[in-house]
Length: 109
Length: 113
Image (cartoon, each protein chain N blue to C red):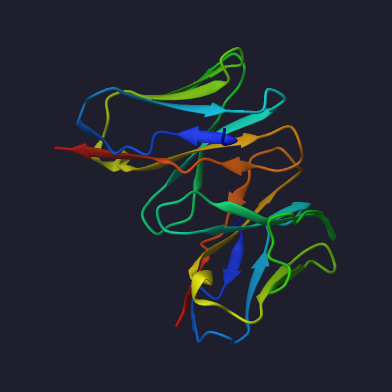
């Protein structure tokens, strides 16, 4: 099992839709979790950290499920500008950050 | 806003040549990462520094790749000799300490011909 797994998509949704991505991780000792956004041919940019209690930032909500070893990202009221690849990042219990391969989101008018 | 600086932005080199990339992390960030990203894939860690010490270089192809961070500030990644399969985006990132949010530079896009 890979350390961090994501559905590559693409997820095609209309503007205004709600969309959710999941990411599973293999190491139960993982400590830190993040979602990054990456536009085509650009660098990854931090979207949000994921806390045990869950956290929300505007239209974005991230949740952690330690029992099932996955994190999720929910985007409400999708905008055209949300089209990007969303990368799940996990600290697998030792001192580094491991990236998933990303989930592509395409929001259409 | 503080940024991670990388240079060059683009590099084209012939196979078997040497190439080097430079990274200047956000001031005060002790942890520095070099990642390689192939189009359509997620970034893969090549090497991680804590100050001037290597924390993880298990995925660094040491027969051709080397990395240093001599004074614990800026860092250089070198490839010698370059191979066609090395064509990728090379991303540098830094964070205040391990296991915290990392911030990326704009990357160096390498093409080996």
